[in-house]
Length: 87
Image (tube, rainbow, N blue to C red; front, side, top):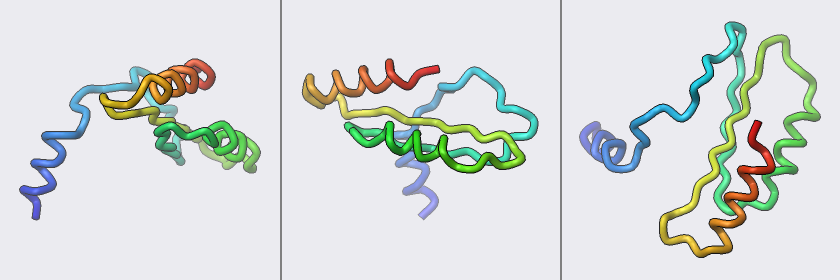
């Protein structure tokens, strides 16, 4: 079973670093939001922002992606989503 997982990760996992900033020392919660042509991602982010703040730092990572064969409309929406939520 382990070899199947290793083969999958070798083939599909991103091998580099996408985030340059180090997390805060008190980081206690990380929320990862997958976003493939997801029109409701802004409502999701607002819902997270509306939550009561915990006593630790929270990091929200939105993974915007689409396959290489995605049409122009999907690619454009991905780009627009990225531009709107990047910080």
